[in-house]
Amino acid sequence: MVKATDLFIIGGGPAGLATAIAARRRGLDVVVADGAQPPIDKPCGEGLMPDGLAALHQLGIFIPANLSHPFRGIRFLSGELSVAAGFPHSFGIGVRRTELHRIMIDAASAMGITMLWQTPISSLHSAGVRIGKDLVRSRWIVGADGGQSLVRQWAGLDRYSYDRTRYAFRRHYRIAPWGEFMEIHWGPKCQIYVTPISADEVCVALISRTPDLRLDHALPNFPELHSRLEAVDPSSAERGAISSTRKLRRVYNDRLILVGDASGAVDAITGEGLCLCFRQAELLADCLLTGDLQRYQRVHRRFALRPVLMANLMLTLDWTTPFRQRVMRAFSADNTLFARLLAMHVGASSSTEFAVAGLGLGWRLLRA
Ligand SMILES: Cc1cc2nc3c(=O)[nH]c(=O)nc-3n(C[C@H](O)[C@H](O)[C@H](O)COP(=O)(O)OP(=O)(O)OC[C@H]3O[C@@H](n4cnc5c(N)ncnc54)[C@H](O)[C@@H]3O)c2cc1C
Image (tube, rainbow, N blue to C red; front, side, top):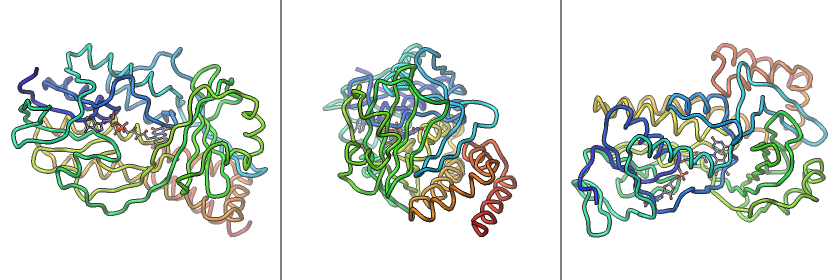
């Protein structure tokens, strides 16, 4: 049993493992504890946007091509309208969540990180973390225990500037991806997004404000998608999750720091949750070395600005069908608008270019 460490991380999901890897690369001793047994299959859209992929590479982690599937951009579909654009200079990938987890665990284990699985943490101690009756002393404690974080509660960090909840259900289908894009299908008060994850499988995720809206009930509202999937056997069970948009007032307290969804989250529709986890992990490891946690909080806020803005913009399309169709017609009339907004979404354009695209869209909407 480990008695002491520099950094004890509660939660071995993407954020916890990324933080462990980033800290170990900087020479810290790290222990990760997770209540579950890997590989952990958290319901997720399983898309990594180009910025998320770049952040993962920065951690020294590369997903083999045979365990993922590339997509070159995003397609929005709403009723009979559709609009698509490629990412400016790179591509995104779909990767099964269990594969991502396994690859991250392999990387962590090769670096000598201690990982304790099936080890739920149920309380903190002033000198570290309690595992049953044992105490592991730790200089720093990181809460990476996800959106419903208990560590956040224990540390008294459960105070929000805003908090919005939507509900998601995810299922896989054994079917070859039918295009080069990740697709977001917009429907009445719900969206379904489809991520290609291998040459013969896609991940389908439904998100809505209705806790009991399931894929089988929602799919008939999306005739094109329904006709593709209705004869295909699902390759996984449908699993539910909560998608939160949440900003915390503080993300650290003394020597306890939150990372990943525990530290706030963006709506799943953005596909930016994992990117945030990876970027926060690198940042936190740097800040632990200098002990400057204020900087962690400041830059953590800055990281969230773009995805939160994009989530808010995207979710205006959820207001009413006529409004959404109007925006879709504006995008169709000038395809560069959608491409510019997508570039902004993945951090590949300046705020000036974004403002120009926004004005262009406004003008098109006025004329539509
Ligand atoms: C429906 C849906 C679709 C999404 N789609 C995408 C997408 O396409 N692309 C993208 O980038 N992001 C997506 N996201 C967001 C992404 O899944 C999250 O941002 C990411 O999983 C957060 O990782 P995390 O490590 O912070 O939390 P989690 O993945 O939730 O991991 C937390 C870990 O902590 C462990 N744990 C909890 N409590 C304890 C405890 N007391 N002791 C020990 N261990 C504990 C859990 O077992 C778990 O392993 C989606 C989210 C949802 C809900």
